[in-house]
Length: 254
Image (cartoon, helix red, strand yellow):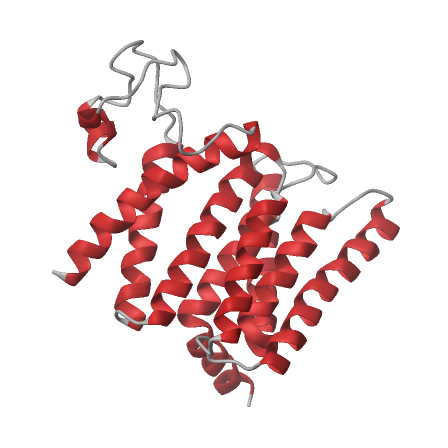
């Protein structure tokens, strides 16, 4: 029952995140107007706004204009539902669960905006930073202030140095400041140990993606790619399974 409720709740939140992903880059108010088709601008009725199910019922097309609905919409809803379920399964219903879910929802929004527009909105990074600071103030996080500060310095500083090194080597910008600011905030929330785990995971996953993309001819050597989604993915994996991953690594090398 708990799993089912978390899936339903997560899919509903995912539907709202789709609104944020579409509207924030265009500076459109999130609350109003009500949901509408971006192709024909007709309002979407309640029956057609049921997460995931409506997409299947409508066969992926708008009821009014018959234009294709973005596959991203049900993908965001499904991803949000699954991550909500994973967090609830891992941490049960606690105040820490609320923190992790809130941060993950911000990271999902950042990731899909970065994928489409190659930007990380400062407002969303600020929201994540305030969330992390509040969690530290009220002792919600399993880390203290010093560990948090070291994490921010390590993650944000490490990414800034990597970007600077990349600029010297490739004679072009290889890391946006939005990525650095996001990494700093993630370090704040993770602490220095999990920041290392998250950074390594982010780089490994990004490298794997680039190698596959170049092998398939979809990416070039100097093509810019959004790094925000990889930072978000590394952070979420570290929240959920970072301790287990670190323990397994130490068993292998020691």
